[in-house]
Image (cartoon, rainbow, N blue to C red; front, side, top):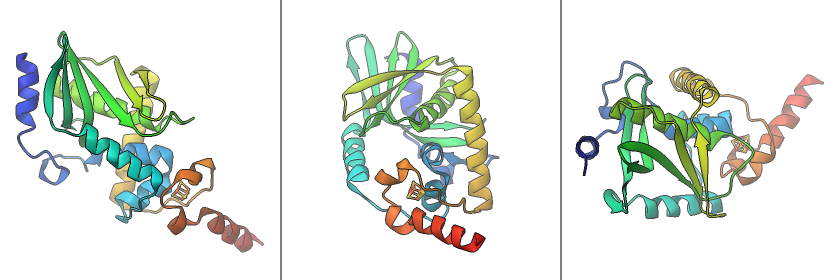
Length: 217
Ligand code: SF4
């Protein structure tokens, strides 16, 4: 096992949970970027109001992550697979876990596992890119590509960690940090994403829309 990989595993022996990190910036959980990109109101409910409700999709997702999150490193051919590893970036004030990091010929590649299939939005790519930003800082190298594995379709999709995606990720980090700092609730906006949202019963986005229309009359 190469020395840089050993140092990454050693760093994970220490607790890297947000409350123990000495960041100058308010730490942003990697998962919050995904949630914000999916729906700002959902992100506020989960990370500011501390609400979470399970539904069939979140339970399936939790099961998948529990199976993936068996901590440790194993070798598969020429590639080392490191699972459930804590990542952090002091530069960007990020912290969170990566499902899987593959290491081949000294190149680190993040792989994020998702239960469903690829949606029309970029939330998974943003989360993956933020993981890559952490790994780049921790391992001192550029990471050009990552992967999202969609369990429902058994597809492993390559994501180019290019400039537009990096820019979008940095903007989302700044916006989520502002949300976590100020705690101002973004209004719920009904969209096709609400169909699979576990917080639908609490949020009632269509009722909020009707009330807003009623107030405008
Ligand atoms: S129901 Fe819709 S608006 Fe409400 S939190 Fe979920 S995705 Fe957001």
